[in-house]
Length: 210
Length: 210
DNA sequence: GACGCTATCAAACGGCCGTTAGGTAGTCAA
DNA sequence: TTGACTACCTAACGGCCGTTTGATAGCGTC
Image (tube, rainbow over all chains, first blue to last red; front, side, top):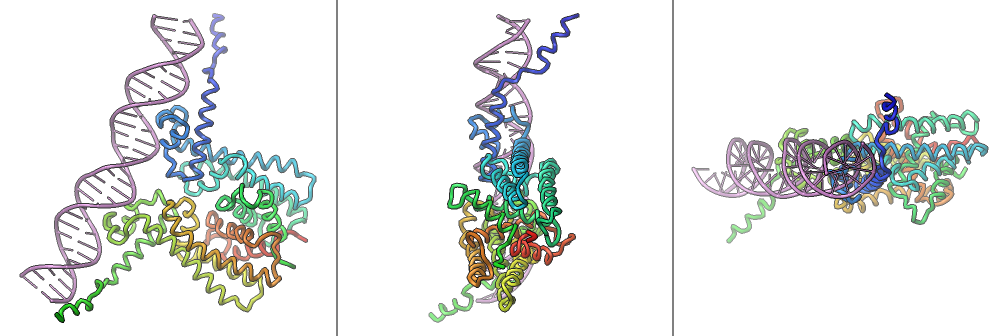
């Protein structure tokens, strides 16, 4: 009867490290395609081709195209949250504007410096299949809540005074940051730092000469 | 031989007014679909169905799906330019901030109040077929040039002082305005006027309490 | 050496796509 | 009455889609 104890030796299959590696390569290539040509043009056959396998083989690693897409969107949010958390702990002792600058820089870093996942999220979420959107919205809400509480914090410290609601200005700020994926080139004339500074200065002091 | 002169009587077919009416209905319905479900999901059969005809009949009015799409994008720019021109002539005698407010309000009006054409342009241009994008970019550049010269005007009047370049802040402002199609509900809590005011105030004075 | 498991494949499925061909009423001028 | 033209139709075309089926190697374990 002692033999039954042996089951604990292999409770689940050993999962060779290759499995996870292929999964990652699929996600990387798929994210690149989703970002450059969009959801509809990114076919399962194209993703597989970029990885070096056939379309049917992809279904050994993922259940469907939408499962790949959803994984990428979720990873995109994770990258943003990780960047935010680092900015939060780094900027704790700084004044309000500098805290904001670091968080804006962190968000832009997630968009341009930590793989295409976050950029896919920003560019492709709007026309994602409804079933996918339903899954993503609650997770995305978590990230937005981090920003809401950050801005509320700065607002109650009397370092910031928004004319109407903080929520409205958060949306405006998000629009300013996220729309940069339409035109910003990380290898172009402006650095990501200077973009972060421009957005921060504009958000904080405005463009008026007064 | 005088008969040949009769040709001038009907140089082109009479074009009954119905033709133009159907064309407009196709564009209206197609724009609504492009805006709500995106380019790929908007099929020729769906557009035709919304109009009340069959897919093949649509090809009597347009040469291709992309011709419909391109017409909508161009009309979207026209709507923005018309709004801009009205704001320009209306705000001539006002001070810098009020001029800006009226132009921001006009741009938002084009997005939310004058049919779905401009909104389609903003939401669907990024992943439009490359052949379509090539045609649109020069036209869109015309609208952006209007804004660039407006902001340069305000800047040289010393009423505005941007830290870096005007071009950069125009892009940030466009991002703030255009991203509102992701979340703004014209029938919701905020009016379009209050949104325009929030964006204007934020752009002009920032959120700092100093 | 049989077995189970992983990772891949070729081939095919039904379905929808944009588009075209060809036909048919209706209108209106000669 | 004929003929040209408009606006629509049914039917079909070739093509690509996401996905499934069933087979085939390789590989470590009993």
